[in-house]
Length: 113
Image (cartoon, rainbow, N blue to C red; front, side):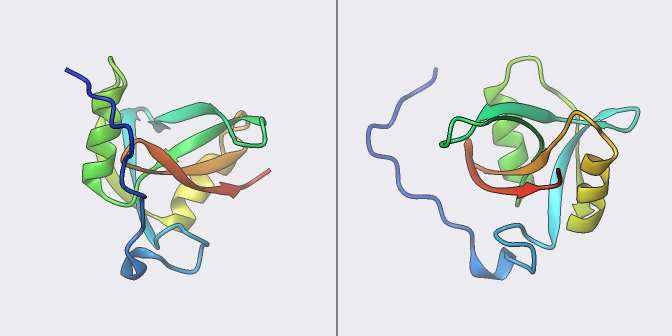
């Protein structure tokens, strides 16, 4: 059963997880759905931009939470260096960014196009 929390605690990335890529850690977790395909998301940002981004997570637990929220999404959680995740996104013409999810919230966006 899902529960809506009226005043959720603010999300924070642990400083040790942050690297040289803005709020993205040096290593991110992706959800591999096979055949060099990874989970991505179409989102509307606060400035009303609608973008397609590669779904990235700072921990495997965050990736597991994300899969639990999206019925029908299953795959293997794989660790990738940030640079490799960025190259994966660049290789997919439909994607314009990497989205860093913590819990079920987007906490950072890294633009590639």
